[in-house]
Length: 377
Image 1: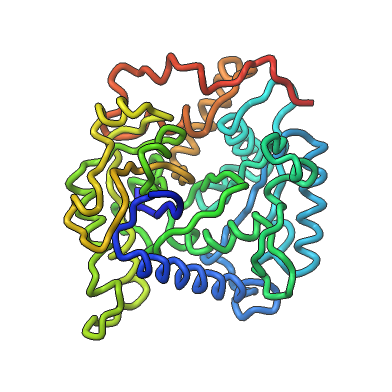
Image 2: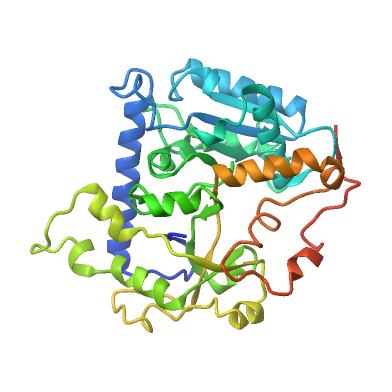
């Protein structure tokens, strides 16, 4: 819900390419400036409440990996590269035994938080970064973890490369002020760009507290085959894109009226209702579900380009009431969830929408679940 843009290959773009690139750069620079103000020595460093995450939780595969992650956090914090006090940053290892998956790790984190400090998600905004893998496709990061991989980005303005973790904190820094209490979930090895975001209105925030509020990205149909794909009301989605692509307001024409941040955000990022969420669907499944959208040119956007597209997933927010329900489920039925690998995407998101899969076919799928004989120690 909402949209971003995938900047690769023949991904769709809805304004002129130069305009879209300038917008992304301007947004990144604005977020970086704001983030630096929250670092030690910045003018916002002592007033983070409501501006920054109340807690940042990084998951680990086991206690050994968790120790490495804690040491990395200690170093970053001691050098002044992280906002807030050190206690704001937590590392929670997966429970020993069979791999629990990203969904199981999410439940485990919430159970640990409830045991230690109570249901803090009812009043707090928590960032949960899944980093419990072994970097098998990126062996160079197998020791320190991809969350602490270095990037050519000086997030702290101190002449040092930033880590993936810092990049996440930069690009997601405005979400705490925009979202209701709950847990925002992302993989630790991705960097997201998005338009400016305005705080949710009261009605939307109330609805979001009961379920999932996800970021949606305009992507190629080929990308949709390996991601979650949102099916939305086509008219609503096309109208949202058309509003955001208004050349006079976005391209900076001389006769355009200036807009403040909230006006810009309201125009270029929106919330629409999901009808159904597909998980790694085939082309035929996407077309049958009416998930494939026309080309930007076919939408009447002469400045756009690219082919047909779909709205894919990345990170998402669990509202505090949904967190309550998940914890109640995990606590009351440990035997049903024990020894099972749960996917935070395939299992949490496929039931979402006002018209989820009518045959509940996702409940019969096992191709996205690893063997329960895969064990972590």
